[in-house]
Length: 394
Image (tube, rainbow, N blue to C red; front, side, top):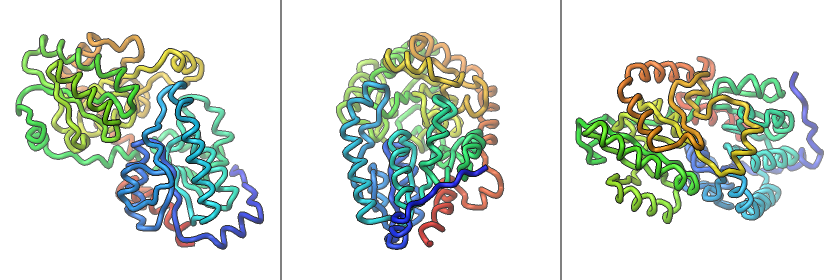
């Protein structure tokens, strides 16, 4: 049964006065890219918490928090004052210039507050890629339903969870399906790779802390694979939003072990690789959907690990494995993440490529929305734009 929300009279009055504009709120690089694609399609005036992709789409930036994405409790505490200031600034702008609608993407705790406040102002809110309540703190769904009028979920099993909470919900597909790759030969030419050697993509993440925690093990795994398999190469694929200081550290660290880094957009070049050593996150799906089996890694601080052990509800951390409901691709977490374990798992993937190809085909099928949703648009971004366009026209 859908739960109703009582909108104050002052909010109804504000709704009548609002301008034709879209408020956008993102806090991570992936959310920025997702929102930027939607804003490009809508072509409407917009403002909000942005990253470079949204600004490139013409969205006016109230603040940029994409460099503040936290990984762990200590990181979150350090960035809290900056995030709180930006959030207050955004909500003040929304009261001064009431938007027609709001698009929130990811950024769980912040957007939960932003969405609830905007709805009190009478602004319709669509939350694209909402919190992963299925993974931890499932009870949050009973309060988070107040933060959105419509949920655009990106994983197929999320739809039933949000629908039970009384929120209109559409599974729009995962934006990783929007990844376009070039041919294997062209990608290898761009990266100056031999056409024949086996090559691994090293994707240590988009946050400074996770890059420092995962890249050394990846690099030493490459050394072991070279010793074991002979003609073997690798490239570090750096996230475009990674701070320059950390990116330079990654480049220098890789050079010491004979592995080059690229700052080119990694997604179109994924077809160059035979296996990916990749930090848990959206990149795991991007690799799998591009036909590159991922070896999924994750390492965080001790305090965060202790808390997560008490709250985590799932048996897998990798998105491809969560969608398929089994450990279809290897995962190495915390103390299990060693160079030897990484090399062993990567070698097994390379030796059993047909089996992983079957899992990739199954994954692609599982991430296909219904025909009715596909009618809204060819991509997740087009479907989200269709869902929100009627609010802008109201």
